[in-house]
Every structure is written in C-alpha cells, then in structure tokens.
Length: 514
Image 1: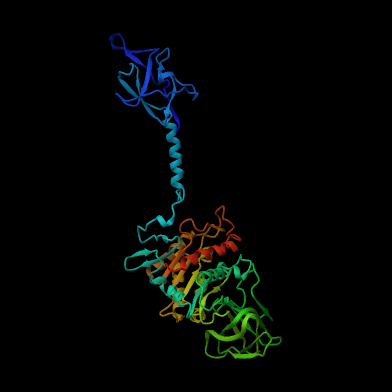
Image 2: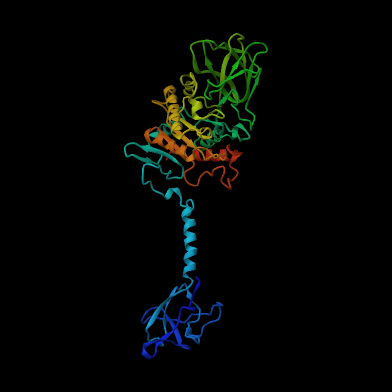
C-alpha cells in the first residue's frame, strides 16, 4: 500500500464575512474523516517527507487560510475535511496524485491488452466457443477433429478421425502399426546430426517405449531411402557407387536411384541392424534386373521388367538379429533398375510399431502432387507400406514460394486424395494428420504462416478423417525469429536435434489414445 498526497494551493478554509463575502481563515485546525457525517477520524497523517507524524492528525491552515500538503493513510484516496472541531460541515477532498496513478494504470492496461496471453492461461482451461476458428486440445496437444454432426471441433482425439490409428496401435501385438511421415527437409531432418535424430525416428522410439509389443524387443528403422534428397547435416545411412541417375518420380520419398549395369555396375549398400529387409523397387517395361546378397553371401537376382508399378517389395532374410550388410547391384546394362530404398526389420516383421520417414528436401505441396505421371504412380509406394496413419508436415516451402494459402489448401487436398486412391489398408483408407510446425524465420513472406495453418484447419473442417496437430496453438513452439528460441533451431528454417525431439514429444503425446 502507498500513502497518497492531499492539500495544496487549491484547498482553503473560508468563512462568510460582512455582507456574506467569502473570507479566508488562517490558523484554523482541520481534521480528516472517512465519512461526510459521523464516521471515524483519520489520525495517521504525515508530512510530505513521509516520516514526520502530524500530531493527532490535526492540520492547521497557513497565514492565508490554505490547507498544507500532507500524506494520508495507506491506500486512502479521498477524505472528508472538517474545520469545525468535528461537528461539520465536511467537504470531500480527493488525493492530488490520483491523476498520476491513472496515467500509470492506463499504460499498464495498454501493455497488458497488447500482450499475447498475458496471464499465461493454459489452453486446457479454455473452452471452444465456435467451430471456426478451432480450439486447442484439452490435454495441451493440438489434435483437433471436426465433428460434422455437431459442427464443432472435438478435442478429445477419440473421434473417427484418429480411431483407425488407435485401433492399429491396440492391435500392434498381432500386426504392425504403421505411421508414414511425409514432408520436406524438416521431416527428412536437415539440421539433425544423425539419421536417428530426425523427428520420425524420435517419434518411433518414443511410441515404442510407451507402447511395448509382446515378443518384440525393439524393431527396425523402417523405410530408409536409397539416398538423401538433399539433407547435408548428417551422413545418409547408405553407400552408393557408380554415380547412378536419380529420379524424383518413384518410391515413398518420390526419390529413387536408377542403377546401371554397364561396367562398373552401380551399387547400393546398406549397413542394417536386424533380421530382415524389404527392397522397395519400381517395375517398368523399360527396367532390367538387379541382384542382392547379404554379408558377402550368394547373389539373388530380381527381374524388374513388366507393367508399370511402384512400391514393389522383395523380402530379404538377414539371419539372426544383429549387424548385416545388404549389397544391391545392377545387372542389366541395357535397362536400368529403379531402387527406392529398403525397409529394415528387427524382429518386427509381423508385429510392433514403426514410423517411416518419407520426406523430400525442398518440396512444397505443389511439388508432391506435380508431374505428369507422379500422381498415378508414387502413391502406390506409400500404399505398399500399409500405413495406419499418414502424418503430413508441409507448408514451409509453400510459404517461401509465395503460394496463395487457398492454393495450398487445394494441393494439400489433392495430395490426400492421391494417397487415399492408392492405399489399401486399413479399409477404407488411413486417417490423415496434418502437422503444422512453427513459422520459419527468414521472411518476410507474401502470406503469414497463420494463413497456411488456417487452411489446414479448413481441410479438417470438411473431412472427418483429417485431423490437425497445430503446434502453433498456445505457447508451445516458438517461431524461429522468437527470442529466446531455446536451442530448437539449427538455422532460420530447420530444427536442431532438440527441436526435432520436441516435435516428436508433442506428436507422441497427441497420438496416444485418450
């Protein structure tokens, strides 16, 4: 509490003189009260120095009848002055520093109103008041499913939008529960220091730890592309020799090597840790044969000619769980062989939980659906992985390219449609989770990041099988330009190991059944 200042040049004691003229009265005792009549006298008055007590709380007017300045009791902003020994009449006086207080309060209120969530209110305490814009998950996540029956966002995560994934997770003891992570360089892990530090890899580890599988001690790394699509921050876990052509139209990452058997033959080598592997390749009328062997053993030849089909799988038995080398080599010098990558298993061929990284560096939603043959071909490679959930993290490159947010929504919807047309399990198609990360920091851009997250929500609003993991909702994920950014970023666009782990932590919490 503070004492407020009273009195000054405008406060006088007067009396009516001859002919009723107002006359200033010097040397008059004045007391302060808390009411216009009756009440209690304030005796706790001090001089302006803040320490000298005014005896008995009695003030005395000066030689011209002016009331001296003084400090009132703590927290008191108005008093009733009595110059007649307490008998009245009394007149109300307001502290002269109230105006200063109001100036301070106005400044504080303005700053408070301009602040983002100034009270630090948790999202869990907020209630949805409208279907649009969407509200945040009540458990602090951001997964929102639009309920077309009630025309509202349901934040409990248990509607049909994610039920397919939850059912697959519950059945992991009897069949593989599979997530496909499709995206750009953020999903491929530019900024990470190792393949095991990407957010799909960290998500896989977190889910396996939280949801162990009977009879499966760990599991393999899932799909490993034949080559990086552009990530340079860590060493890609394959070795390619011979300089094969690279093609952006095949495979789960829309990236494949075209092995050539002309001497010296192109080769692709994997250092695997597990019990089995699937070689993922493309069939074409103009493709030849490749061969493979494990740990220097005998060769097995695979013919890849025939009607065009992406996502062909050849199972390879690696032997007992442990380190193994899988060597793939071109055979045909006339026709090239299309190799997209390998799926690694470690005791989880028929059960367990896996997250496949299927990302393409630098790509936007437009790039993913582009190409004259791509929409009809590459989604089959995603379908071959039998996803129970597809997580799509795109938008950063759309914003960089200045793509209109409405066009982003259109191409993202087309991408979802292409995936659904090619996936066969589960029936009718797996749920889609649109994961929206925080804004990149190398702007300015033609459109704010919020415009793209809004379009993601718009898709979910009309499609009950699409949910949104909006990491920009609430105080969850600081933009790259925000200070401090807590070591979450490796550069103006990409996440560090810490940032990628943070994304995985958020998604792991969101994907757990409620």
